[in-house]
Image (cartoon, rainbow, N blue to C red; front, side, top):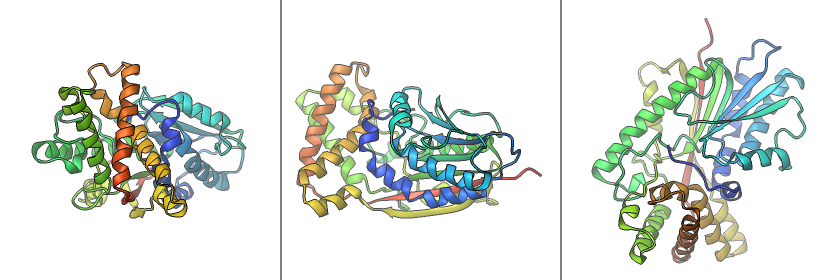
Amino acid sequence: MSGAMEGDGAYNRHATLQAGGGALALNALKEAAASVVLEKAGQPIVIAEYGASQGRNSQLPMRVAIAGLRAREGPDRPILVYHEDLPINDFGSLFKVLETDPDRYVRDDPHVYPCAIGRSFYESVLPPAYVHLGWSAYAAMWLSHVPTTVAGHIYVPCMKGAASAAFHQQGIKDWQKFLSLRAAELRPGGRLVVVLPGADDDGRTGFEPLMNDANDVLTQMADEGALTADEQAHMVLSTFGRPSRELLTPFATDGRFCELSIEHCERLPLPDAVWGEFLQDGDGERMVSRYAAFYRSTFLPSLFLALAQPGDAKRKGKLSDRFEHLLKERLETRKEPIHSQVQTLVFARDRAP
């Protein structure tokens, strides 16, 4: 599974779009914390975050969830918070945030205990019937693997023919697998909140112009000889934007799937904070730099898995810098916001009989 972000805290610094999408789901998370069944007062409450990355975007959601649970259970009941991500994730940056960030959720609560798990969420992450409240933001868009290595474009909505069909089928399988694994880990009466980039009925997400720019940059780098033709041909993002109807398909028969039911489903437009600040300050150079850094920190590590020697840090660094420079040049000529959406779903696990 790809989807690891650029290390050394780069994702923390540049993932403002993802933070904005997660913020639109905080009311749903608050309601989920108020609704989850909390049995056995002497036992810890368990929160699981699936796809934590480097931790900065985790702080506000975890504070909201913990505040909701504390309002019900008081200040002394232990709360375990598990942050899951791939083994290659930059967990060092996550723990640095938990130690030093002024907005860290553990700052004023000595009875909250954070943990980390290096494992794909397409595997079992925690024991059965263990999690009270689950949270996953901008993570389940990543597939378990790339279903076809040569796709003609780096981004699924811009692909055609067999490549597009292969990603579509993998997207269906992985969504059902993600839900079934999380259902097994939830306690009866537990809740799972999932935040994803929204997609229209035709699967378009609003990121297509930016992805076309990135695809053109990689072609230019191949033409320059910085990338081999084979490397460029195998660069593809294993992300898949699912329309609402596809997210709900597993529940179509009787409203249930693996003992889960849907409590909330909402798709909203996501304001582009970078564009909004540009309209205020008029600083076009800063704007394109922020877009390029967002793209580099979020997507470039997955694309560069196709390098002949992906572990060559020196070459990868030079290629990353060149990519970012060329992307900024293209963005200078196409000043426009990212018209994206955010999809929020809340699932409830059946209560015990």
